[in-house]
Image (cartoon, rainbow, N blue to C red; front, side, top):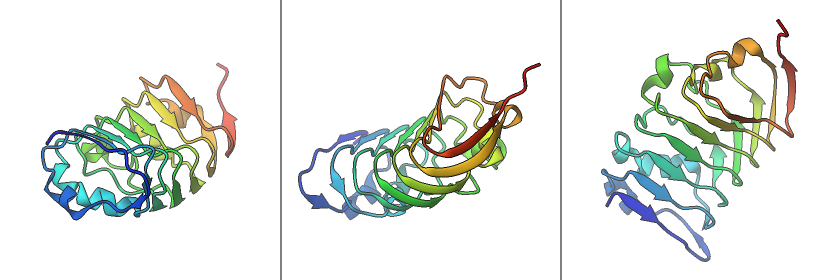
Length: 171
């Protein structure tokens, strides 16, 4: 199985059989009522850490902190907006060289959650990121030109409804 799309009605947990989906490339689980901790799902999908490219988890009830996704070396798109994620962004998000194996990440959408803390300066290491949506969270930071200068391919940056201060040079 390399493609999975599920539309479930009612509250469900992710089945343990996800641990056997080692060749999975695309997973669409949006608009369900999945109630697991997001880290539990990522652990169950770890068998596909070298093949998973697209993960759509929006509009569920996933809880817990945003997981470390660095081990998913082929991941290009990660959508987890409109869940109940909390905590802070992991320190590993962008701190390892070329995002430590997740250098293919082009889309990161985490809007409408309860993520708090600062936007790490190392987010600028995600050099091929095209879309970064962190809107409607409780993040804060001074966003400088330096912090964004390595995001060469960035086309969309949405950090609205947070507590950001923009400090962009006008040279």
